[in-house]
Structure formats: structure tokens, C-alpha cells
Length: 331
Image 1 (cartoon, one colour):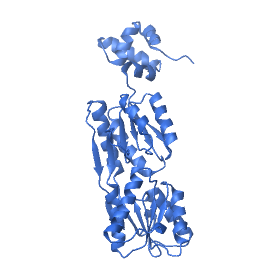
Image 2 (cartoon, helix red, strand yellow):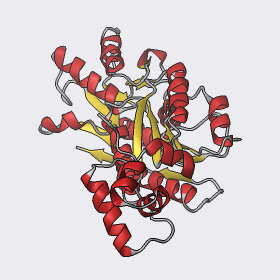
Image 3 (cartoon, helix red, strand yellow):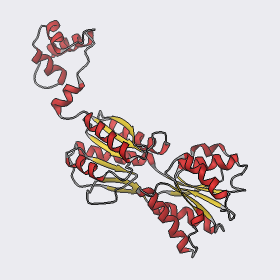
Image 4 (cartoon, one colour):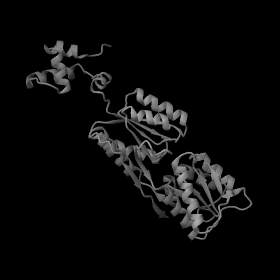
């Protein structure tokens, strides 16, 4: 089927291709009569603008690349929704890709986004691609970090994050105040800032209460549901079992809940569960009995969208660092 071009519209309208181009791009002068005629013919022919050609001419595509570690995690999708709602009003669209907590895949998908000529990249990084992130940012494509930071601060990128240390500290402190001395922690990857910082918050609370760190109470995972399930099996096969389990993200917490249920444990009577982040499925439990810190992913996304507008439209150069404070929730 023949693809309609501005030459077709010009021929049917009886005007030059230059005039058609001015009318359809809203640039330059054309009488109201000519504008109406050209637009009417374009509609009749079902003309679709060539987005690639237009982006090459304008040096922008009105698209933002979003790189997140897990597109099935509601936390990251709520961040993305906040970005989308903020940018939709000015005509921007989002392209989603998953890094899957894999630095090699993350590097590949960022290169794909650059090939798609995105105007900026929002990144929840695996933490091991500092060199390519540096090159992208220096090429003129802004990189906005969300949730996770880089090990080095020398790049001075925009950063939207949570106070991970304080959130994990508050969870652990509450458990200790309730009389728990053996608290099993399900860590995420210690290779990323959120994993390191939440573990640091846990250790800070233990130190404050003069409790020794028991390596038998530590399970190092990588933010997956399977990690939560495996952690429960790990803890409950020990001679000395924890009386509470703290999981440092909502996906792993879901795995914890599933495995405890399979093993016949009830929450919180048989095992107390604390979670960094709300588990939506836990709302089915009445009461859920889960202690958690409430995050603000949508608000983080909105702020990220605002920063993108400041960067892309207002050409702001000074990096922004915004830290959100999680709130302890007792159910």
C-alpha cells in the first residue's frame, strides 16, 4: 500500500510541497484558507508524519528511555507512572526496558535506547556501568538516576532516591523494641546502593542496642521473589531460628510470605515479618500483621518528570538531588 507523502498532499491541494510542510509543521506563513485545505486533504488521505525524519530535523524525538531492574515490580512501575503523568502534558512518551539486575544487559539496553535517539534516560542502575553512563551524559543525553546511586559521585548526575539507611534502621529498631533479638535479614544485592544502605541501616540498629551481628541471621539475595523463599528455608533450617524476618524489598517479601505459608507458619503469630516497601498482596490478609516502611514511588516519579522538564526544556545544568523519607507503618 502506498505511503502518503507531503507530495501527495501538495498535488491534491494544488499547492507546493514547501507550503504543505509549513502548514503541517505550523512554521511560517500560510493563509487560513490554504491551511484549512491542506489539513483537510491530509485527513482525507490519512497522512501520518514521518517521526524519524522529523526527529532528525528537530534533533529530538520527544521520547524518554526508562531502564528499570524489574518491570514486574509495582514499585518501579509506580515511579514510571509518575514520570509518564508529568511528561504527557508536554507531549513526551516513554520507552521501557528492563536491566534484570544484570550489568551486561543494562549496558546493551542503554545502547539500544541511544540508537532510538531518546532525549534522556532515567536509570535504576545495577551499579556497574559507570563508564558508559559517563559517556552518555557527556554526549548530551541527560541521565537521571532513580532509586539507586553510583558508587562515585564525580559524575554529578540528577538523583532521586530514598533514605534507605533510615528506613531499614526504623524497621529493625521497631523489631528490637518489640523484644526480638534474633532478626533474620533478607538482603538484596550488596552491589547496588539500595542493598548496601538498607543492610547498613539494619546493622546500625543492632549496634545501637549492643546486639552482635549474627552471620546465621543474614541471607544475601538479589531482590527476587525466589530469594525471599530461599531465605525462609535458610533461616528455618537453623538450630537457632529467628523470631522475626526483615526483607529489604517488596518482591523478596512476597517470596518470604509464600514460603512461610507453604511451611505452615502464620503471620505474625509464628513469625513476625517486616518489609522495606509495601506488599500489595498482603492486603488480602486480615490483619496482615506485616510491619513495613511506606515508600513514595509515584511522588518520586513526578519529581523525576519535573527534573526532566527542567533539563530538556529549560536547559538547567545544575544537578538535583532529592531524597524521600519512608514512613514506618504498623498493621
